[in-house]
Amino acid sequence: MDAVTDLELVRRAKAGEQRAFEELVRRHQDRVFSVARGVVRSPEDAADVAQEAFIAVLRHLDTFQEGAAFTTWLHRITIRKAYDHLRRRVPEPVDPGSLAMEQLEARDTDPFDTGMTRTALLDVIAALDPAFRDAVLLVDVAGIGVEEAAAALGVAPGTIKSRVFRGRATLARELGTRGMGAASDKVHDG
Amino acid sequence: MDDVTRHPDDATLFDLVEGALDDARAETVQAHLSRCPACAAFVAAARAGAAVSSSAVEEMPAEAVARLDVTVAAAWRDRVAGIAAAEALEDATPVAVGATDVIATAPIDADPIGNDSRPASARRRGVRRLVPVLAFVVLGTLAGTSLYLGEQQPKDGATLGRGEQETATENTAPEPPSPSAVDGGAIEAGAPPVADTSVSAGEPAGGEEYKVQRDVAAATGGAMSEAADAASSPVDPSEPPADYDEFVEQQQLCLVTRDQSQLVLPEGRIPTQITQGPLGLYLVCG
Image 1 (cartoon, chains in turn cyan, green):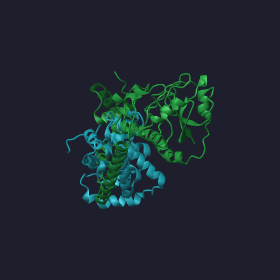
Image 2 (cartoon, rainbow over the protein chains, first blue to last red):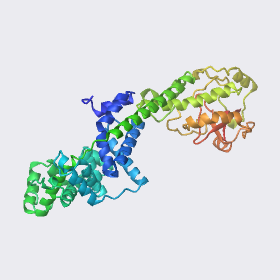
Image 3 (cartoon, chains in turn green, orange):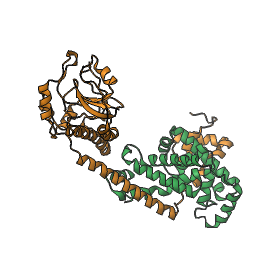
Image 4 (cartoon, rainbow over the protein chains, first blue to last red):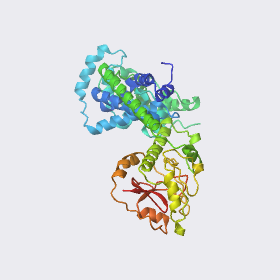
């Protein structure tokens, strides 16, 4: 099943193959959850958003046009569902103090040597300027390309590049400011 | 050669970090960075951020995955049930023989039925829109209402002759008609041919070909019971109007046969009663 493209899975699902849709969900659920988490912050809310996004995809599966990329459509829906979720509630502000403590406690179990856990990293991303945050979430966390992210957010590709670039730089500076170790050391000459 | 003193824009620096610049352009940007500490620091920060952000994918918690699986399974069952119900409705309701021929030859603007490139679900929706209209007319026929599909001349003040009406009544058997068999006076019984109501409208030409079409799926389904309960008829069929379109508007008619091959529906109308008059079959709207 892993060798099958998203487009083929969509076709099969449209034709009535439940397993194909389940494979789509399995394949993308972590990134959808992470993108949602980057917007709504709470893991519980992110799980709700991810669920809403996949249900919306299923309900509108017949409208998906094969000329488009499935991931663009999926993450556009995810971002919108996440913002809908935000509008329904007031997000809790992130306490920098508690965040730093979580990172210190998690340092010993950091498999990626980033100086922090992935959970805390998403919290820092979530605290970015929304324009930068959404671009970073789509390009770096969801892993979709600049063109796809531009289509998903309804902006020009050059705008996405600028937002991702600045978002990444801001992220690194935030991590450095919080003393979060390895990220600020990963500097390569341009 | 590019000016190395100019600060590159963010998109260019992004492309540099991503390795997407051509060699000449990359060399120019690198030359600028070597003499501009601010841009160099900016690029260094962006590289560091890129190394971190790409690792920020978080696994969905197991309990959330379990909930998602259950919800998706339930939604899939709903999807399948919805599709099956729609297909069952299509199978259960009689469709006029020759209706497809009529649809195919009707002057529609959208893709002809034979070359429909819409998704299967959209095509099913198009057929489903036909079915309630056909069902409505079939029930009207079975209730004893005469269907009259002959050519009429309202300007001449012509009305249905008694012989034609009797002929019309005799032919109201619930058998689907062939549109080619309809003559000036006889009625083809059962569900008359209906144009695809999901396609765009043509322009009425002098009141003779009134081809405004609409989607009547939900409205007609609800109107079936309303038609049975309708207490009064606002239509006075005794005197044909001078202006056909004005007559339709005044009498709130929503379905009038002018042409033996088509039924037409003005926009936004819901049928509540079926009757006949000098212009043919009327479905009166509430």
